[in-house]
Image (cartoon, rainbow, N blue to C red; front, top):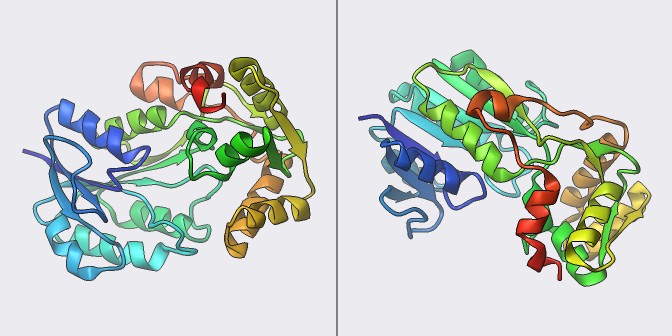
Length: 282
């Protein structure tokens, strides 16, 4: 029986991936920094990228694995590739990595992990989603907090557009990349069905929630100060502001057919997502 390790199984993509694989009859081992299992009917181990004592139990007997970066690590590539090399040497054949549409292969950080897998993993796939729709409902995300506090989205994106995608659709692609008999051996750029500006988002959120929500067009300096004022470390605030300016310049203005092509169902649009979560903004 194929055993699949799901690292980060308590998260927006890891949990539904673990659930989807379990439903398809795979032996699933979830791995998080918590000792409590996030998914019923799965094996569970504690796992921390930075704690080698947790690695052996996680990797033992694993055939395939889903991986995502440790949180708030500026460059996780050395840490991740060290563990992945151990996994491949130990018999893991297929690795599916969660990266991002903004991170090219051989770029810094996860781009290096992407390249490592393409060069060394017998079977692999890299998920490169656009920005998550969940950013607007997660209590810990700055956009969700800003909407709740101020009825505002503050960005330096200008009129730039983004193919916002539901994490459930990302997970559905991930399930297929892990479960399919034939390895995908490719990078999947994953978007929703529309490329929307933050002005568009504010209009949809206002319409759905019944309260005025505006998009504040900030300069990069103003956007960074706003993020730091919310408690975000300077280095991360500066990085997110750079991503804002790349959106402004058109880097995320695209829509792909990945979800439909891989899962045989269309991706969710932002308005239907917003209606399902409207109470968050009221």
